Length: 349
Image (cartoon, rainbow, N blue to C red; front, side, top):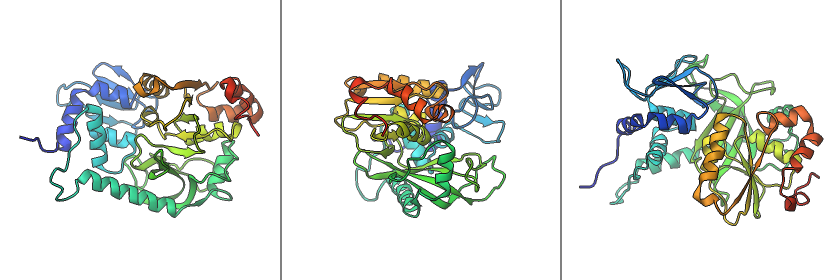
């Protein structure tokens, strides 16, 4: 008899049986302390605020977690949903089933679409609507923010736009408990064919000098896994990295080099490579999550025929280097890390 779709509770229980592996995959910047995994927050930043129970004991169940700083808590399915920036439980279930290597539910009889498909379609539709409602960067508050990060080449960024009042859903830990709006950078996340599958949002302060003072100033919406924020057309050579600011910093030095921002370390390691790519530059980030993403990229079977070249920052990431060193010194140092065939092709203009 064919097994029916697993419930959220079933998936959470299976995740709990692999709690340590879940934490190592989604929260690689953390570390084990006795029967707990400790990390800075649900986004996987270094620290000790968030505790994930690895083993059952007393009244605590394996897989339960709590962030002492924000009061957020839940099971490992909740952790995956928040960590990956998913807007629906079904998206988190699909991701968890991929992690557990479980078969995805099928719709054999075709009488009605499966809920996973409808949830994905709804989130992608909302993402496309938000991106359509945004405006080009020049002259916007987002341009002011990017300039404060040393990024000035924004005129032809068709995949990066600005929304003056992007809705934000309050989370536990936010000072306000209802939804509200902030100005935001809106990035189109696309597949290898340029089709929008989702968006990535970065909410900003009203003055444009930094990110909004909320629990999660960066969130994704839609189908993100495998896709990214693409700038430029890949013709055999591509640069990839985690964040938008990292990749725009690289583009300041080499504007002809096509780049993809994967939006997070987890998504970076799962990024689908475009056909025909021969060499991929990987903008490293010096933290545990960045190190883990690099290791997973190198271990992928489809990467064995591709030359992976790390671009090593002097500080935590390339944007930190750009701001500290200035464009000329930043570009000159990176130029030495490029393959000899690419030094003339992508030299700064």
